[in-house]
Image 1 (spheres, rainbow, N blue to C red):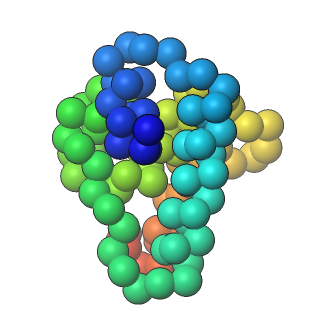
Image 2 (cartoon, rainbow, N blue to C red):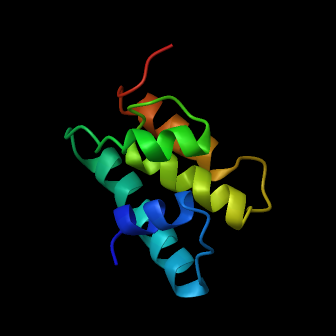
Length: 97
């Protein structure tokens, strides 16, 4: 399975197992590092997934993965994954406000 299939699985209401969650966590780390080290624009997520998650259509795939992980397995620190991804995207100038 790849991250797209896992996001679709989650958006249909299926529960992700521990291996699938770990895969998404690893993939998120890879995507964040790619943004930090590259000037390539991150991949855009499927609108169906964005709608299910309640985030803006045409959001970055890494934002969707972060949102899914925050819902399934929240982290215990000051910033959730979604906020961390937001800051990385801001620093890399893929987001503006």
